[in-house]
Length: 114
Length: 114
Image (cartoon, rainbow over all chains, first blue to last red; front, side, top):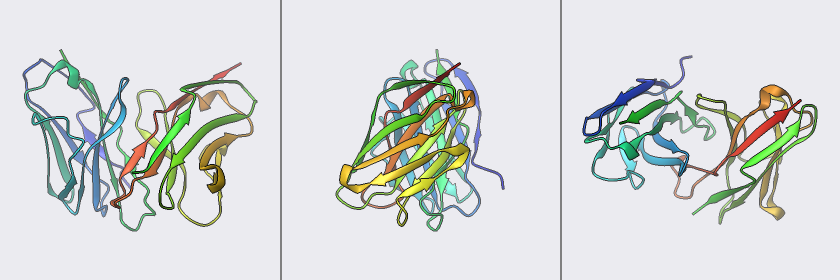
């Protein structure tokens, strides 16, 4: 089975530009998570969805960040406008209610804002 | 809220020596506990998990962990370290409120020396 698929794997963008990160969860999974990893703050949960509905977005840093899940097989995380402090690795992850609480991670999107 | 504390941000062992990575949890309800491994420039991979049942849990690559309620610990061990074990290891707990929401520790970087 294909795992969680993220794109792009690497992105370098200029400050002020819009960034869109994409995620395809594992088929059949009903939970989707977006995490951010930085040296300073470690792994932070930004937002998670259950059955395409956002459940907890308390980790979203500010209004510049938004996430959507239009269907069960696709989610986006947008940053507009981007800032250098947004440079991080963004992980998408998914899990299924009946999977014993195991969360599966994608390979990450490595974002650099210059 | 539930949380985990990883003692020691860096651990160094000799090849063939015992690996011990420490994790203590804080939880008001029975926790679900996990260890993930992250190799350089890669995503997170599940090593093992404890949900219910047997307190000694065996995972991939020869790792195991024991859930000790009396000590609120879930330490990760491997009898004999291999060079390929060099990576960052994260302990994590399912947070209260349901929804499979994982909260991570700050990570332990394992270095294996010849």
